[in-house]
Amino acid sequence: MVKETKLYDQLGIASTATQDDIKKAYRKQALKHHPDKNKDNPAAAEKFKEVSQAYEILSDPEKRKTYDQFGLEFLLRGGMPAPENGPGPGPGGNPFESAGAGGFPFASGMPGGARTFHFSTSSGGGGGGGGFHFSPADSIFSEFLRSGGAGMGDEGDDFGFGGMGGMGGMGGMGGMPGMSGSSRAARGSRSGQSRFDAGGRRAPTPEVTVVEKTLPVSLEELFSGTTKKMKIKRKTYDQATGKQSTQDRILEVPIKKGLKAGSKIKFSDVGDQVEGGTQDLHFVVQEKPHPLFTRVGDDIKHTIDIDLKEALTGWKRRVQTIDGKQLDVSSAGPTGPTYEERYPGQGMPKSKKPTERGDFVVGVRIKFPASLTQQQKEVLKDVL
Image 1 (tube, rainbow, N blue to C red):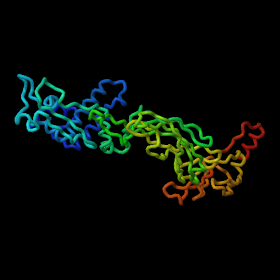
Image 2: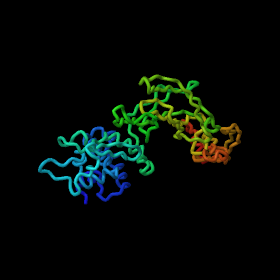
Image 3: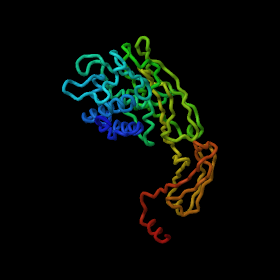
Image 4: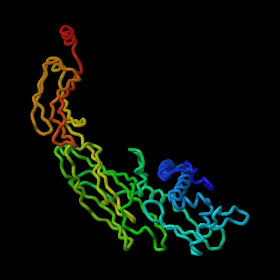
């Protein structure tokens, strides 16, 4: 029988919950109350701490079993009997007696990496130094993301939290304009650094961040495909000396045929190197305005100007496609403002099927006269 349900209540689950239920409940509560999403709400930070601590115990089968049988105070006291006149440890006595005076270590820890907790059975005041100590809430949350907890969400969930720092100065080669960037927390760390400090305590692991930079690309480059060379400055960290330095690096960014605005081109481990990990860099494609064409999905639209007389009596034009082909376009009139002429297979390559292309679409923009004489108005009344 479960001695108490406080930790289950903090996660909003029953004491019979499965490990999967515990993970889902923690994910929901942690994202809801994370301090980065509730900067002006101190109560949310406290709630985030509570649910993280509840998850730290309940996600470990051994610690959960001990909690269910003896309660939280027993864990915090390191397996010691309760104070005089207080409730005892419950049926079965001290579960760590067989470990001797040196205490009993658990090494299984949270999913995704080993942690060691020591439960002491030595004599001393209540809650002695050998008892269980909660890890920082942020560390628990980071460990959860590293262990795959982020993958439990619905598609489109945002696990990122701001304030993680950004890339050093960055600009394109050949006069490429500077690009503004933003950063958000990613879902893990690729650091090879030890996760424990000199005293054997678990050291906090900085989360890897993702830095996004806009990459302006012309319509012709998106049509033909190209490789753009980008020069970046990155900060490096020397683990041996603890010092940082700056180095230049050239990245070759592949622009595939038909790539659409908003597409991301991703590079791993190329950004600033910080203690515990490095930054990923994502280039976000931004389509430059074109003087003649407008892209609509996989189609390219070209709009020609005609005057009112042409719209009424007919017109003819020769236009050029994006790949240099000449097309003769005409209408005997009248031509309405919604007129369109489609030329299949003359538009943009389709990104997933580069051998196929969208349409080239010709539209019109009718220019009305700014004024008419009275005589012109009378003539128009007679003929219209």
